[in-house]
Each structure stands twice: as structure tokens, then as C-alpha cells.
Image (cartoon, rainbow, N blue to C red):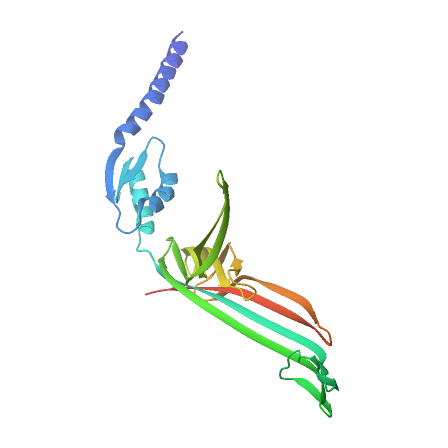
Length: 294
């Protein structure tokens, strides 16, 4: 009987301890207010909350943290905060967008005038000539026949670079360009019939990018979306557009190729006494560089 009574008393003590331990732990938790020096709350809280002990609380307002935890846990969180709450590093982001175009055309044609008699003549206007063409001219009296064959080649390139400063973890956006007027016609059908209205709207064209960098040591991870809208040569109001959205990682100071596009087209031109054929190609590329500023 005495052994049973002793074991029952032990179990009662264990149960009391199980109830008392949380209360004792809660009694040791104290509230501490910590002022932030460099980083905002939205960058600090997600990193510190995994370190918080059971029963503790961590919140904030403005530039202050409200921490309720045991002494040991508060010390652990303060040490982690000291490593996080450091001055943000200043960065310079450069984006270079390049365009290269190459064309080649081969063709031949006849032009000139043939005098039939005193009262009439047949004229074939010239189809155009350029450097690299071979020209043969035959004259007889008032009649002139010109033959021309050539191989024309052309190339061109253009590029632009935009740069913007931003802190580590911040967001940056830059866009440079111009607003072009574009005519707009609208046909509105109402109770009084159809009404044609003509107005002018402005379209923003240019080049720029949106970026958000994050540093880990000497490496940077960047979410970036460069864009380019340039006036096209094929028609008034049209534009050539390039869009890119990606996440890249690299070392500070090095140029990183984000991507690009390439196009190639074959074309022919036909006339009464002339014809030509050729090829045109275009390549665009986008490069990125991130440097740390002092």
C-alpha cells in the first residue's frame, strides 16, 4: 500500500510541474522595445520571426520593434538584428540595348528611251542605282538604252544605355523617350446616324527598365524588365517593340547578357524591265551591369 501511495504522489508532482512550467516560462518573458537604425520593418520582421521562441511575440510600428520573450531569446534576436539592420548598399544599374541590321540586294534592269519616229517615243524610267552597280549604256541617234546590274549591301547599328541608382532591396524604374502624335479616327453610330470624329492621341515611345536588386556578398540577384519602343520606318504611327522580363544573378561589375531577338527576311522587287532580290536581318541584344557605389 505504501508503494502505491508513493507512486501516486510522484505522478501528482509531475502533473503539477507540467502545469507550472508554461506559467514560469511566461513569467520570465519581458517586453523590450528596440529601435531600428537602417532597415525598414518589412525587411526585418520576416527574418527575425523564425527565431522567436514558443509563447513569445514580435511586432513593430514605424521604426520600432516590440519583442516579448525570455532573456536568452531576446539576446539571440538582438544578435540577429545587428547583422540585418545595417546600412543599405548603394547600387548603380546599367542596361544597354543594342540593335544591328544588315541587308543585301541583287538586281538588274533596263531603262532609257527609244525614239520610234518624229511623233512618238517609248520611255522606261530608271529603277534606281547605287554604289556597287555595273552600268552599260547604248546610244543610237536619239535612242538611249541603259542596262544596270548590281549587288548592294548595307549595315547599321544603334544602341542606348540607361542607368539608375537604387539601394539593395529597393525598386527602380527609368524610362526615356518621346511622345509622338498619332491620328485617331472613330465612327460613332447613334440615333442621329453615323458621326466621324478625328482626334490626335500621343503615344509614349522610348527605352527603359524596371529592376529590383538583392545582394548576397559580392553577388547580386536581380528581377528586371527592360523594354524598348521605337518608331518604325514602315509607316506613320507604327512602332517596333521589344519586351523582356527575367531574374538573373551574377557578380558585381560584370556585364550579363539578358537576352535578345533576331529576325531575317527575304524579299523581291519586280517591275516592267527590272527586278531584284535580297535579304535583311536584324539582331537585338540586352546587357546588364550592376556596380556598388561608395
